[in-house]
Image 1 (cartoon, rainbow, N blue to C red):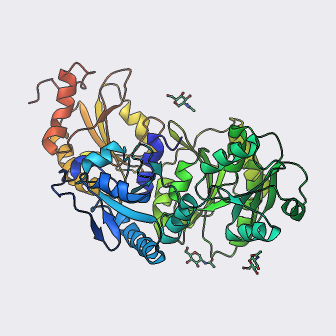
Image 2 (image 1 turned 90 degrees about the horizontal axis):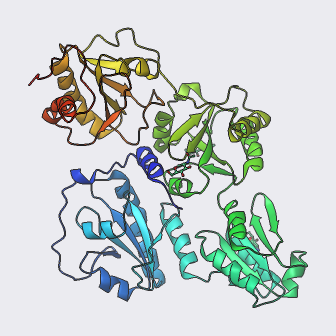
Length: 504
Ligand SMILES: *[C@@H]1O[C@H](CO)[C@@H](O)[C@H](O)[C@H]1NC(C)=O
Ligand SMILES: *[C@@H]1O[C@H](CO)[C@@H](O)[C@H](O)[C@H]1NC(C)=O
Ligand SMILES: *[C@@H]1O[C@H](CO)[C@@H](O)[C@H](O)[C@H]1NC(C)=O
């Protein structure tokens, strides 16, 4: 349920925390099984992990890489949370695993990206629970408080119920006339699946009266929005879906810290508002956006991307937007492939935003592919410049093979590859059969290939029914230069005319 590989890939793009395991110096640790601590964070190794688990019934473990900048940022928050837990004398402990060294552990828990946080309860290695709270100290502590506390608080008085409501923006209270019935058991099972929301339960007339409740019901209380009542027989799935709708705020404010929530959600359709929170039109625009959101709860997640937050810059890149052109709205659907949609109108009223989302849900919209204008000198240099508007024309040229690098200007691996790609262009510049090309994916998109990471290299052999071949291997010049030849020799579709076959 958590995430498809595409979501993970997108998440990677956004956080720029690109992990290519093959690039890391990967060695399994030589440590003995002593339990060391680094500022109250337990240093976990393949060898001591069993003992750590046996010692600590509530254990949150961060899998990180030393080379990942975002991991470094999280480390200080993580340490702060660890120190706090220590001072409080909490049963919960934090540990960390260096993913590059403790490879067996990363493999066992199928760590897709770094950092990844996993929680273990009662030393049970077979039931890892992925942490999806905020990536900061407060988020970690709130999440652990929920996991180490009761699944639902028993509320005996109106005051205790009110106090629970005070504790969080989203609180669920259940009212059961029968204190130990099946309905309550179902409720607790559903509650256990949620990580951040607080749950309460009561069978006391005083509490029923306080909330004007007479029959069995489950009520979601949202601080800014009021209450939402579920008053049917509880079917677990139905109740789960109902509460799930309210887990996120009506409008989620995007940041690195909350991104994991968004990408772990069941709803894969996100409607994003890109705007500056300090522009004069912002309050009105935000109110319209928020008003539109109410009708789409559980169907479309509304997200505000504040461009004044520097860590959101990659989001602009990813959507091919520039600060000057804002505010803008984009809808994104992340299923097996990522598709983006834009409203036809510039007037971002609640009614227009609602129509836009409804049209999307009704299947009336066509995906939007941003493109730069075709540069006049796009084919002047050995490496041809492709944009959205000329991509298909060039790569589907029948009598030529085309090898294209799809990159993002900010990506380090792309920067390293750029000079190699230039040399590759030089090497093939007199070869009539092959075009070496590149496309900036932050400004241009195409439906032809689904880009899941940067850089992506695609080879389009010459011929009528061209299909893109992804190059996955080494990015050394020598390997790249041989790729077209090898593809051809392996019986793949042809090189272009004039290539003459055995160039080497
Ligand atoms: C809820 O919080 C408010 C403000 O923090 C406080 O004045 C009030 O007494 C609290 N109510 C309960 C029942 O704890
Ligand atoms: C606008 O956003 C920035 C960046 O998140 C924040 O520091 C600032 O306090 C916000 N300003 C207002 C007026 O909300
Ligand atoms: C996504 O892929 C799965 C499995 O390949 C398929 O069952 C599903 O229908 C696809 N969804 C969409 C929206 O194409």
